[in-house]
Image (cartoon, rainbow over the protein chains, first blue to last red):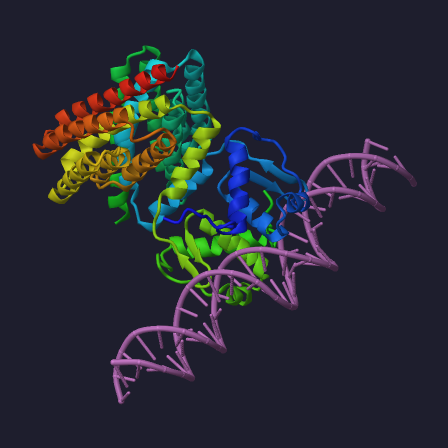
Length: 239
Length: 239
DNA sequence: TAGGACAGATGTCATACCAATTGTTATGAA
DNA sequence: TTCATAACAATTGGTATGACATCTGTCCTA
C-alpha cells in the first residue's frame, strides 16, 4: 500500500460536510445553534460559495441542518423524518405491500409493548390516556382518527425509554402513515374501524395500568391480528 | 382554507427534486438508468444549472441518485446506508450507549429469528453456513471476525423475506458496526470473543436446520444476553 | 402603534474554466 | 492487414466569480 495520501481527496463539499457533521455529532454545536453566514464560511474554509452551499444542502437533506432563507443556517432539532423518508423510498421502489408492513409490526410491537409495560412511568400512562381521549373526540366529529391512533403506538414505543426501539418503531409507523394517507378517509366504514381501534387501545391501556406485561403482549398481538384482518377484507372488497 | 395555491411554491430545487423523485418512485426510472446531463436538464426544467445541481445533490444524499464525475448521473441501486447514517447521527447526538443498542437487539432479534426459521429456504441456510465458515477462517488468521459475525444476524433477518424487518435490522446492525469499529481490535481477548460468538451461531444454525423455531428464539435470547454480559465486563475493565 | 425603509441573509442566475471519464482516431509493431 | 496502444477530442460533472433577486428581522419614522 502507498503510505502517501493525496493532499486533497475527493470533493471539496465532502470535506466541508465532514467537518460540520463532526462538530455537530461531537456536541460542539447543539440544535438551535446558528452557523456563520455562507459568505463567512467561504473565508473560513477557503472555498467557493458553491462548495459551501453544496455541503450545507447535503447536511440539510441528511437532517442535520435547517436552512432558513433570509435568516440563516441552524443546527436542526433531532428529527427522524429523514430516516422515515429513506425507508419509505426503499419500500416504494420495491413495491412493498401494506401487508408486509403490518407483518413487521406483528413481529416488533408485542415485544416492544411488553418492555414498555415494564418501564413506563405514570406520565407515560397519562399521555396514552390523553391520546385515547383525543381520538374519541375526533371520531365524535365524524372524522377518522387514523393518525391519532397511529400515534398511540408511537407513544407506547417511546415508553420503553430506549431510543433505538422508539426511533425504529416511529420510522415504521411513519411509513404506515404515508402509505395509508392516500386511501379514502372519513367514510363511515373507516370511522367504524377507527372506533374499533380505540376500543382495543383502551384494553391495552388497562393492562398497562395493571402492569400485566404478558397480557399487554397478547393484547397487542390480537390488535395487530385484527388490523391484518381488516386489511385483507379491504383488499377483497376492492377486487 | 384558502382555495388558491401559489403559482410557484418554495425553492426551485425542491420542485425539481419532487419531479425526479416521483419518477424514480413510480418506477419510470430504474436503478442503473442514466439521467440526462446537467446541461440538458437545464433546458428541460428551464432552470439554472445551480438549481439543477442542488436538486441532484439532495437526491444523492437521500440515496436515490449516484453522481459519477465525468460520466453522468444515475439512479442508485437500493441501499440502506442513508437510513443507517440517519439513525447513527441521531443516536450519537443523543449520546446513546452501546447498552441501549444491545437492549434493542434483545427485544427485536429473537422474534425476527423465529420468523426467519419458519420462512427460510435451503439457500438461506447455505448462506449462513458460508458465513460461519468465513468467520472461522478469519479467526484462524488471528484477526477478529466482528464484521462477519454481525453479518450473520443481518443474513438471518433477510431470511424472513420481509423487507421491513430486514431493513430495520440491517440499520440497527450497521449502527452497531459503526459504534464498535472505533474500539481496539485483534487483541487476543477480542479474538476469543469472536470465536465464542461463532460457537453460538453454530448452535443457532443447528436449530434452524431442525426447524425448531422456539429453540431458535431461546438461543438468540441467550446469545444476546451473553453479548450484554461481555459488554458490561468490558465497561468495568475500562474503569 | 402601524408601516416603510434598510441591512443582512439565503436563493438564483449567467458565464467561464477545471478535472475526470469516455470514445475515437492515429500510430506503430506483429 | 490486424491489433494493441497511445494521443487526442468530446462529453460530463466540479469549482469559481460576480451580480441580482427574494426573504426576514429590525429599526426608524410618521
